[in-house]
Image (tube, rainbow, N blue to C red; front, side, top):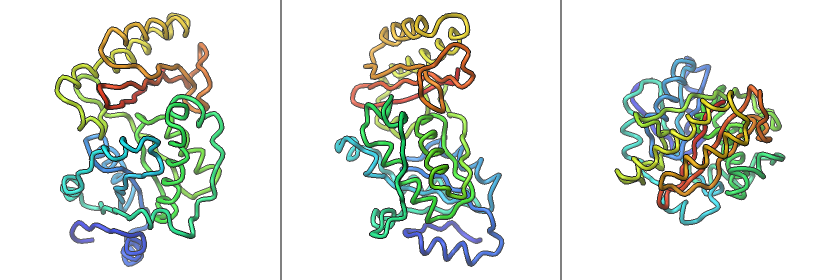
Length: 279
């Protein structure tokens, strides 16, 4: 493979892959663009495990329940492509909406249950239906063997795992550690919308998560949650939720649960941020 390439439809991407006998394993890193160090860590992991890595850039309208949020989502395609060009073995795929959702749509639909009713499911109705749909179709058309997702969106990760199980797509879902800046703030495309003072204020998110992680083995969950909420509210962000749950089912956390996670969603001015920490 010579030179970085960008594909704007799945057909040309598949023809390229088929023309390269050396490519037997394809990894995919689905993104909505505005790439950052967190995305690049997924790409590096994928490069270690596959012959070719496809980075998709598609701002999915089906997962936005707020039209303004969709319109404001950062879009910097030239910067994204510039970042990707540094990697050998990586191609970009920037499909049109009509390619992702064709008239003969292959997505059969799935049942999300509790995952669609709590936390992100409660506050962003329809969001996970859109996530499951777009990821299914990207995996279906690109035919990747492995797909890489960050643990920052841990509820999304559970949705995607369920979708793959129900639809029986022949792909492995690979979770990757959250990448943080020096203050502990999780890297996110939405961070581009933050001012310098916003960044400082947003550090309360990780401080609160770290507090929960350190206290949860010593005190009852309801006590830790109350104290953590008070700590968070000592800052300037507006808390949407702070919950302790099981990372797979998203049922409420119980003492001793080895799959516990604390999840936070909050607004820093008008920018919605989410994060979590495993307990």
